[in-house]
Length: 246
View 1 (tube, rainbow, N blue to C red):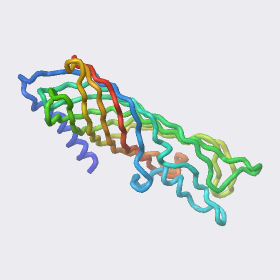
View 2 (view 1 turned 180 degrees about the horizontal axis):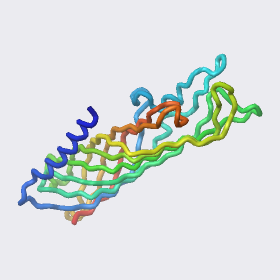
View 3 (view 1 turned 120 degrees about the vertical axis):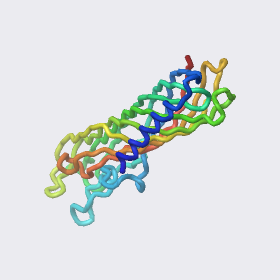
View 4 (view 1 turned 180 degrees about the vertical axis):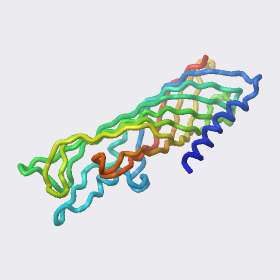
């Protein structure tokens, strides 16, 4: 199902671009934006997500679990996006871009401590580099004072997730240092809404954009040292940026 959906999205990108009239004016632009990325919340994350698994670990002793203590929202952090955009006429635009997000969240065990009373610390690190292709539709054209738009596309999500620090063996309760890491590239859908505010004769512009990306990665599960077999890469981003047309 996911493969068919992504194939359809890729086909839509091609059809929109190919359907543009040969006589339509082609306008190119460079768009750079900065903002914040927020992960999908606890209750809506994919089945088997490692962050949910870390927060809901099982009992290792009477009344004690080896669950971690952090919040999914702690992964909210800064992101940057650069795009090359090509407009066909007044209403259709295709774009290719690359973004970057990385964040490190400190964690401790909720119920367990070292024999000497010290907390048992970990660092949870997530990095996502989305390489995306999108089609934007501008219902009022690109000549108006304010240019709202909507769009959709696909992203190749290059990601890396790691857990670094001290960990507790759930059977022996022995504390040991370790580093667990997984990385890959997975595809997902992308939807966006935004608006442009042209300045200086429409050559430059200020932008505001909301995006939502979907995707998940395979961690390998307990064989790789992770309690959950998946990492949910879905989430929203809200960016403001600057655009230059050529």
